[in-house]
Image 1 (cartoon, rainbow, N blue to C red):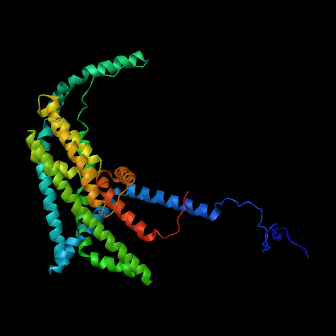
Image 2 (cartoon, rainbow, N blue to C red):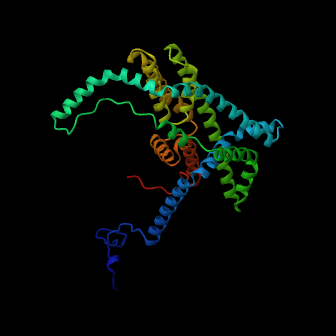
Image 3 (tube, rainbow, N blue to C red):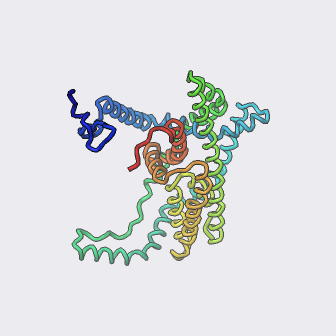
Length: 370
């Protein structure tokens, strides 16, 4: 009987098991269909980002209204259970939120307009008080010249303020965008129940409907909790900042506290901008730089405690957010949609994580451990 090479017996093996093939395992090869799928997915992603960037005037108000509407839907549901029609509840909620925002803007607008009218004068004062840095800059220029630098650092110059008005015009949405946002927000809150039902009934299978229902419920709960928690935390940051400004005798502590609460809704960028504002206002308001930086340093301590202990302890229990993911999402949405994109970065990241958890569960096939 002829014995194949792969069926030769192993010496010393009583059971007579055949030898395994000696061919080495080949590394996995990316098939053409997989490469085409990756390429098409990449092109689709680029096309979506391009459309969102070009059509910002339409998509930003609509997405903003949908995210805000999802956050405020639990309040509308609460009023509906108290026998308030959902449409009337949506209008009342939008009016209440608008009144709160208008109150904060009123606290900030008066001192901001006063200071903006004195920008040239304040710029000259700031330049005079920063002459203390002339000596370190001169030493740095000498050091640069000694090591072969091309030119020394120029003397400190206060930037001109012609950029203020164009920047405000760029950041301020148009009336049409405001109208689109409020109309979409009211209609979204009023018809959220019908939209949920329509999305669920889009799928024919029972499992798909249940999965969609769980996703929508979790998004609504998490975004609602996020808005409530972050609002309470930011109000606390604003109150603490106002108290610090009053103790250090900063001008208009109420307005600075309201500005701190508003800017703290924007991760990373908001606290940094508020620290810079407090530092500039303090340097202008006090005769010494040390006294002027007291409020800014205290605010830095407040935001450090809030960012490293308070917020992670409260929000982290509900939905853990990776620091790198938060930073990348913040950078991307800020580049795409500006300050409003920065505000939307965390809610959109939460929605993405919820979709990932339900559509790609942990029991799905995973990569082997290294």
